[in-house]
Length: 119
Image (cartoon, rainbow, N blue to C red):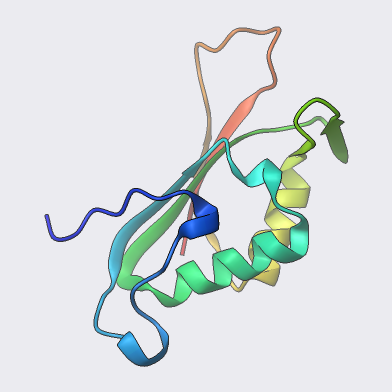
């Protein structure tokens, strides 16, 4: 294993892309954090990540899914997006879904969770 980066997204400095283009990542994983980004900031983050992937690398997104549209959590000001809303942001960021699956064995009273592998 080369380099492992553990960082808050607000502090994330992507190595690769731009002038320092020799560092590339096999996997960039986002889990239950993207609801804190407006669509435009999420698209920008995903574009920056895409530029830093190995040719065979993937971005993994694991998030709660609303049944349609957006659901605002007024306590933490996060947004739960629908599957189609996520896919629209992925497409805007120049990414394609190469694999997707629903979380199984998850409590029914919680939002359904979906995982996407993007390239």
